[in-house]
Length: 149
Picture 1 (spheres, one colour):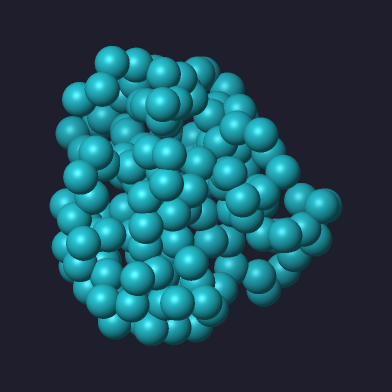
Picture 2 (cartoon, one colour):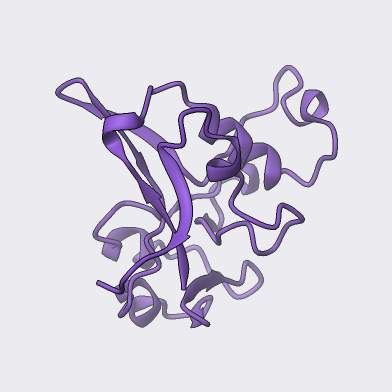
């Protein structure tokens, strides 16, 4: 299965992946409209920096995801290797936020924090591949198949 992988040595810390992600999941067709004044960007990936190393944090679509097991409403499920999220089932309990060992599930700011959001590899929008990888200028983020961990 293809997944998003990050090469920290190549990451420039430019945060473009965050903007491409937020735009791809905004429902807008025009980037200027998606980020008009006053609108909060809501990426499903984020760049962290530690000891002068930049790295992207996004859902790792774990082989045995604890977030899926802990979701009391059944809003998280795993299908074809992808941890998917059903916003209509989410009750906003944040159990998945607390159990994700990577901090990849976060409150959805676009929904006033009443539900959560997470990376779904851009499978529910029209990108065809994760927008973060497609837009990374240094190929620090790639979408590829590797040996299972």
